[in-house]
Image 1 (tube, protein in one colour):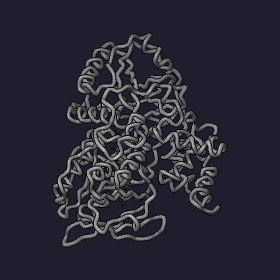
Image 2 (cartoon, rainbow, N blue to C red):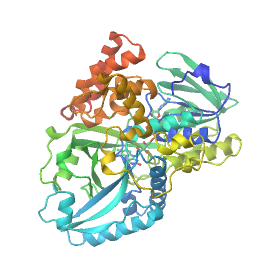
Image 3 (tube, rainbow, N blue to C red):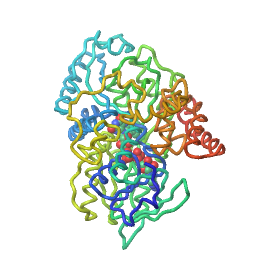
Image 4 (spheres, protein in one colour):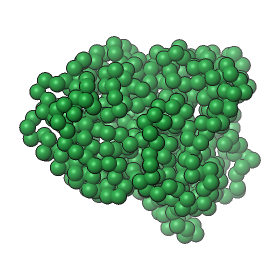
Length: 536
Ligand SMILES: Cc1cc2nc3c(=O)[nH]c(=O)nc-3n(C[C@H](O)[C@H](O)[C@H](O)COP(=O)(O)OP(=O)(O)OC[C@H]3O[C@@H](n4cnc5c(N)ncnc54)[C@H](O)[C@@H]3O)c2cc1C
């Protein structure tokens, strides 16, 4: 997947995408698989922004159902089914329990979740049902039993956001796209007032490139307004960023395979506690913020809010010292006149500027494919590209068993409803690599020392770092520990302790010296501080 812009590029690209998060990567897969010459430029690393900081749910959104946003829920449930079909190694069926402490909650949430089942139709992951008090405690033994009447069980999907991002990048590359991380767009090329390309700096080599393209797509999430200002210095901001925080606890706070949905928090939202990579993710918050940062930091009050809300439901109340890691992400919500970000639109918005610049923002990870389809359709229309149909609904994603036989072709994915992987399979450490797992294991076979873990509290092998550097464009210790593995999110202190070893492994692969390793460790430690709860 390693790319060199000068060697790879045509003089005029069909589509140039700014931003390598869920949205930009989805557009790259769509555009390249329709046969358009496609370039994607990401300032930092793929999914370094919001796209690695999600709750990790592939879902219709029970909360949006509560708000009556039927269109969004229906679309997202459909996309959930498509994604599970095309990336069966990444989307896990998960049982969620809504615990009931009041008499009306069982029938109320039971009926609501039947509607949710019905809306998913044939792409449903399983039927919801009412649980007795005993059944609820059997599935979630650490729930506070006092006053518990029962529960409602429903099904949704779960995934690993940053791994999906890298597998989308690899899918796009296999379809002919060129994708560069650490390549920052500094300005737009204008010809007679039209956006005709970008000027970008390769942050690794320091070289600046002028890139010509028939259409430029701004997919920069919470940074959308900065690109709009490159196009027109007077452009009004359209993004109202909202911060969401999650905390990570050890699995014994919620043993078993089921997740918990707290249906009504003090701020009128929902809260999830979800098993993930043998830990529990709990979140999230919704805090309007004025400025955007690539490494947003959780506020102490956000952490306290989460601890307080979940503490009401668990027998053992988690304390700040129990938190292994805390991470924050910024939602790129589209502005409306409403003051409360919880009510702003999660729907996507496609904006076409007078210059022809196409801006795509909003949406969710779950709906990235649909958002991409709409965006490329718009690009075809506005830039006069040849009309070609979208094929991504049937395009297996890198790592899927179907991708091996189906690369470059459509229509070869498994049928909806194909047997999901067993829980035992999901517990295999390399499961999320899909078909790449064999190649990672081959590295171990060649060098048995690389079969050792990077840290005794982390599930990752040294070979995964080597693989990340060789095949997944990992350039920094942060790439390797935050997104190719999820070490920083799972256990921030363990990730800090593992950083020197990871720097040495990367240096060996990338041909770097010890001074580079020292700088990398220092830069990573600075980032990681924000994930240690005592520093928030
Ligand atoms: C707390 C939280 C929880 C969420 N949970 C879920 C969930 O469980 N399920 C779900 O479906 N969705 C969820 N979402 C929503 C989902 O994560 C986002 O909708 C999605 O990640 C947005 O992706 P994006 O590509 O638009 O933005 P980003 O991921 O932020 O990508 C934009 C990219 O543009 C790059 N960029 C910026 N400026 C430049 C430049 N000048 N040159 C080049 N590149 C540039 C940035 O570096 C960044 O990587 C959640 C969001 C939040 C905040």
